[in-house]
Amino acid sequence: MNVTIIHGQKHKGNTYKLTEILRNKICTENDTVEEFFVNGIDQCIGCANCIMKGEQYCPHYNQVDPIIKSMDRSNLIIITSPNYCMGMTGQLKTFFDHLAYRWMSHRPNGEMHKKVGIAISTAAGIGANKVTKMIRQQLFWLYTGEVFRKSFIVKAYKWEDIKPKRITKLEKDLDRLALKIIKKVDNTSPSIKTRVVFKIMSKMQERESWNDLEKRHWMENGWIKS
Image (cartoon, rainbow, N blue to C red):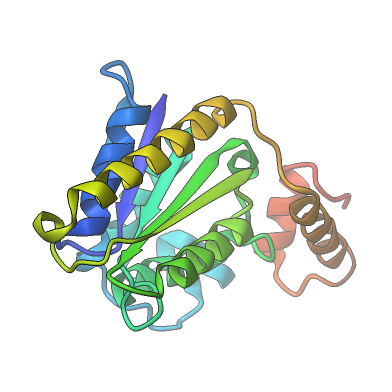
């Protein structure tokens, strides 16, 4: 199994620790795991080159492309972010901004529907649930086959301050999540909602596409007729 882990923050706090625990429950020594921190990616400048000309024309292509290639190689994509002001980190949002051209409304990767995504977030109090919803929304538009999300209220700012009882509960939650994920890897398909949206996008490309690059992409994949 190939796994990509994308962290929305370089700080190795509670979200990172729980992701590591989940990784150890899912992955074996035979699996290939590639891990990325998105802190070094420059902000999207809204030039739309990725959409209109091709992703290679993005001024930050060399920063983002290794992560995208890893996602394309993977069966499982884990994306994490702590709760920052009731949302994902700005760094992670910046990364997602660079993936706009891969949305179902533009040039989706047809292999994404075979992949499993996981959204993970933690917070000392509230907010983590909202973060995982935001990550799931991004993965949905990227045509991901199935997305799990897990948010945790840890009631502490530092890992060493989390009470042992709560850590035991968190580990049990991760045990259940790991079992679900293992069952779904290489055995997933898009939800009804995803298939409906993809069909709507195909009709739009067939009837009124304003972007020749996108229309060729849909035709070459056999999703629309000329």
